Amino acid sequence: MSENKRKNHPEFTKYQELIANHQVYQGLHFSRNRSGSVRWVVTGKSEEGRQRKKWWVAKCKELGIKVEAGAFAKAAVALHPTKIHICQICGKGLSVEYVYPNKNLINKLKLAFQVEYKAFDKDIFQIIDELSTNEEALKKLKVIFKSTDEIENTEMLKDWLNENHTKKSSKSFLSPGVMSNPPDRFDGFHSDGSCCRSESDKGRHKENLQRYGQDRRVYENWADGDWKQADRLMSEFRKVGLSADHIGPISLGFCHRPKFHALTKEKNSAKNNRMSLSDVRILIADENNGEQVVSWHSKYIWDSLKNYVQNDPDAVKLSTLMRTNLHYVLTLFSIIDELGFREFLMQFLNLKYSFFDYKFEGFDPQTGKFKTLTRIEKRGKNQDNNTKRYVRIAFESLEEYKSITNRKVNLWNDPEIDVKVNKMLELLKLGEKSEAEIELHEILKEFAKQLTQKW
Ligand SMILES: [Zn+2]
Image 1 (spheres, rainbow, N blue to C red):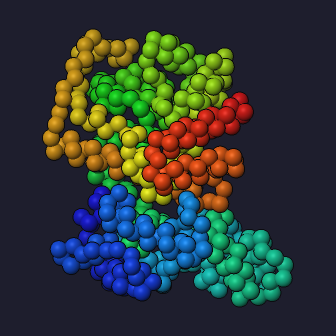
Image 2 (cartoon, rainbow, N blue to C red):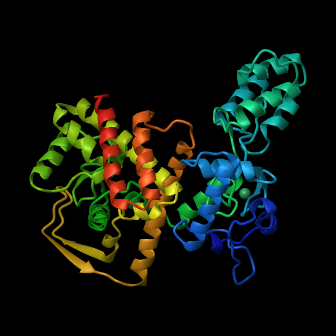
Image 3 (cartoon, rainbow, N blue to C red):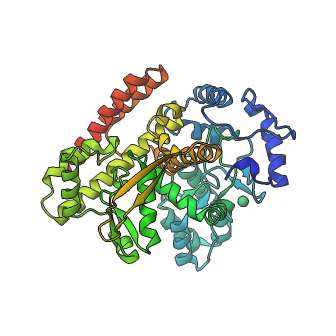
């Protein structure tokens, strides 16, 4: 949902003025809408986005934060003058720091104290004040937090937590009330807080159920292939009450292809993106017939392992490793995006397929085959809007990986790969796009090498 179409809560409008005019953000670019309100969101690609990015880079340097994945997010927390972010939707204030107990901690507190805290309702320091009424309670809390023995009172415990968890953005049992997103949002945080995040997602989901579901499937895995054609064939299955499953699941790194298993609904969910030996054989046979079956980013792992698959358990093992590879790939993309090189990633989205539609004739739901296929070119506002939506969704799918990249250790946990990643990012900074792409392939080969060792 486009942010500016949402009605802002009056408290959020006040917050925008406070932040945009605050000396902390002096020099961070913003303009005003015709209505006079602060233009809060810009895209990283735009001129305004680039100006904002420069500002964040300079701030990181000023703060002694190394400019790498997650750096802007750290700076956004460090700089925030009040540490309280106001939700655009409900106007509630939530801390940008790691102060709210996560589900796991809420459960532990429930077990130890028979109290049930609501998520994002109270911060951990308020909770400690409420709970540590005597020696025994303090002892229980120390056990839950695995804190040091020297802590003698409530204040010491709070200081210890602040130093060791909040200030370190430790996710062990705390979370912030808002997700970070610099430089898109002026203050570097998503405009809706955890107070409303799930509700707004639900709303969006319900609103666009039909389309949204299709979009996500199409773009969230950055897959190669004519997704439009695959999507249209899948609707043929749906018309006769069947659901269909890709031979070579998209979520494992395979291509969009008009090739499916027909499945009943139950079977489909049970299968859950795991290949069988027969799937692998079909994929290899199609490849031998000159078809592209796997996306460019997953080719190395597929090529390294496909010929080792002897039975169904092997096929499941390969599925798991390919899923991990794709997680690595999307994490890497999220790092690239976060550092402002969205344009570099755009080339990997197959937007051209938005402009075609397909008609199948003689479709047989039993086999998934068809007699003829007609391609129709479509140009217009509708297609343009679809394209925009697809781009948005592809990048939205990287969001969840951004929180992973905020971890100190990258998913692949291999310093040698990190060296290559940094080299690629340096090349991007220098504008050497084709050199960067070569390096990107070197990284993909390393992912495959690491995962092949787990075979
Ligand atoms: Zn809210």
